[in-house]
Length: 494
Image (cartoon, rainbow, N blue to C red; front, side, top):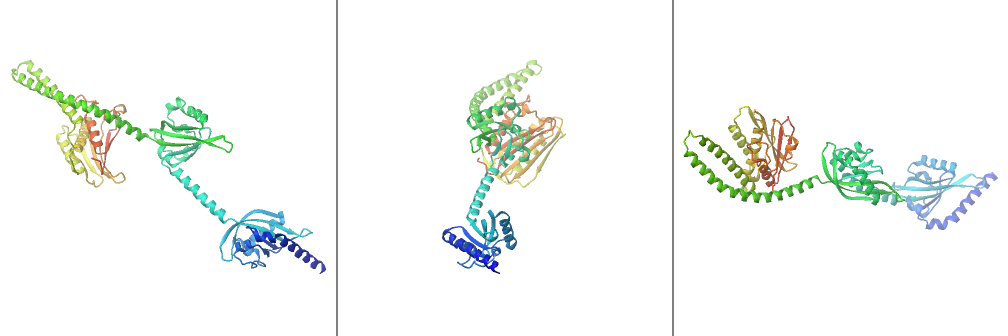
């Protein structure tokens, strides 16, 4: 009995000494300081501890610490077991539950309080409230996710590479531009998107040397190749990724597809060139037209004065035929270089298509030619020049007809594209197709493969469509026919 009393007295003395030593600290510390006995009952708690647990001063004493652990009694026993094994614990992250039921994240550091014989008589714990830190972490994580989403969803291609030009990340913009998914590219060399001819001249090696010399490559213009084999014009900037010691451990690149801009630049240059050519052609055609009319009239008079049996009459007929050909070329040239002033009206494209198809069918000399008109959706009206659009459809149909002298099928299809706010029509034939080298020159003025053509039909079509703010695309494969697709915006700047 005396031994038990002696041990209890030593324990009380021990706690008394601890309380005396920590009295001032308990009043000033911002962290929660709590002591418990060996059974886990609170013997003292600082003002910050009371605030943390939602207690009034003095209310905590005698309560079991398990009532504040989020894990309850099981967690209190686990903490005590750790203290028995190691004597102390550091940065034990958990949650406490206040008397009002609010959960608060804390980081706990605790030590076992031992008597002179080495037995545990209690614990001393210091708990740091992690609420503000967690809030800052959440804000930081939110900002990181926000930035990551910006980079991932950027319309431009953003990629990272290791020092050997192996791709380590590939955003959605890169997927959209090149057609490769991230899983198809990450872990492979960036040479995957470099055209073969640029690989032969070691473009990547030259860029790598330039990059390592200055740590960046800025506004570099070149070409790259997509998954489906298309060559695109790109401009990119490449910057170094460095470690804490300044060593280059990789690089990041931001790449923009400027193919459409390059195409627009070429179109503007062509437009300026054609404008100059048009002015020159219009003046030249005007000067030729009047003398040509006089020549034609004179030949008519001379031919009519020669007997029908005279061989010279037939020769003059051939001359007159060629003069008429020249006259047609001059008229086509004038129409192209100096077209009539546009006349704007409400366009009913379906009615125009029906009228033009019927006219071509009636004028066709080959019964084996079949022209079919399809309308996939209701076609809304829009403002434009009816004559110009009739000329476009007529030219495309006549070209398809002449491409198939033995007959075949021509399909004219109309549809409305709400996503692009445009109407489209296509003329598709099952003729011999157009080789690529010819397809590139189709819309150039005076380019023709026919002996009876002037080379101004498709050039005029393109000019009329561009006047409406639209575009013409041609798709063709030798032996598998040709498809012309015309797109006209519903709100055009005519």
